[in-house]
Image (tube, rainbow, N blue to C red; front, side, top):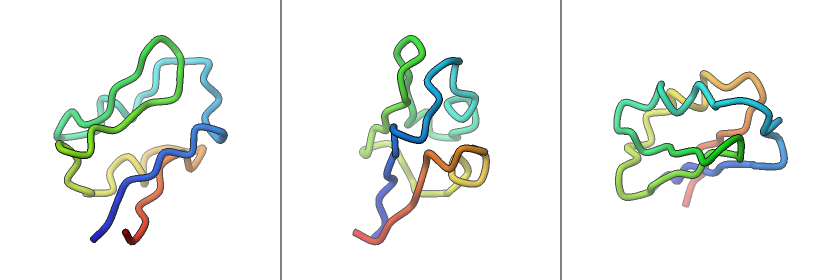
Length: 63
């Protein structure tokens, strides 16, 4: 089973995260310019955010 990991140390945290709008399940949320957080109950581990983010903040890992 996979899990979406958010590596906040890689996130520049200086803008609204465009990956939040890429998520088809609305599983990503962002407060102000902080690194996004994931709602595991909504995330379907599709990898769209992983492929979209140029900073490699998102990572799918085996759980």
